[in-house]
Length: 208
Image 1 (tube, one colour):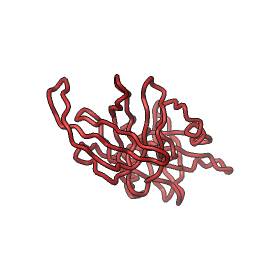
Image 2: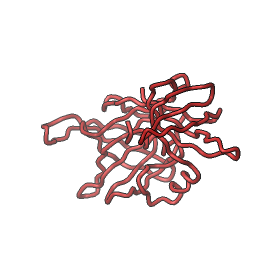
Image 3: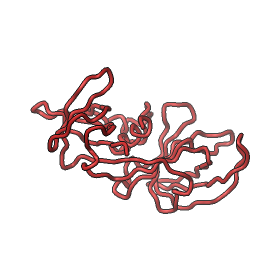
């Protein structure tokens, strides 16, 4: 859950990826936010208590504007034209972009972090945009031959062709309700401290 949830949080904050990006706009989007993760111990109205690493506890409050999501593992079959996606890809010899992971976002998150940006790792990029076209193909891998798709992902000011193979990790992100927040739930989020000292959750991902 952890890697996927981090990605979800960053996109909710209109970012393109969590690891150190070259985009200053992405960095500024996290200004003032504190990440947290743990297991829910108690829920009382809009407030909840979690137990995190080192057996520490902390309390947080939900706001009306808190963005809540949940995720599930997906497959190539979940990709379709018209979806808004975020794909992490590594440039191959010759310049082709091959995705290591793709996140499919709900309609409510369309436009979040839109664009094509470099990530911290060499030759690695993140592209958030709309799937304009999909081309089915075939790719040879260490495990043999398998289906592959080539996505044309469009965003304001450009587009990228991204190869997605059976080894690409696909994650489907769904909008969720606070009813999933209950004792025992695994959560990860980002909060901002209010003037009265309350840690108000800006975005929250709840493991299914």
